[in-house]
Length: 224
Image (cartoon, rainbow, N blue to C red):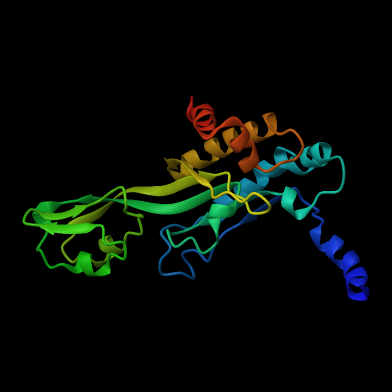
């Protein structure tokens, strides 16, 4: 059809990629009341590392032709568990979280934490609040609302996810580990090394993980 022939050059142009990577984030502390961190400098560090690792040149060599949008190594960051930036479909993702600690002696049994917890993971006992850590998403709303300081910030940092992608064979990113901000770049470099060492023809990280196996991948990336 005529419109299909006319659209082909435009679609081809839109599908091409100048860079072999993409780094993005969300609104952050300055614009979002849910944000737990501010990671502008971290995003800049990701871009610098990707340039130093020459990811664009690496992918061009692997692909043996022009880069397409689906070849890009995608890095994404969400400053809170709402994950508005769609971190679960990117190659390397950071998810800002807080792990809540409890001071039961300070609890007045007011129940404010129960009302604010959207996940329903807090139980109020005669000894104070109890949190189901397996189901807690680390949003820290309960910490912010607690009038007595019975719920306090413990670990504050990121969950690292890897291997997400869309396309013909979509895959949600897998949780790799918790990391403080100063540890994130070290893990990122290990992931990039793994990606480059095991990349056969420009495939996404998720496809490499599927080929090698998640347990083997995790063992390689978390070993010292």
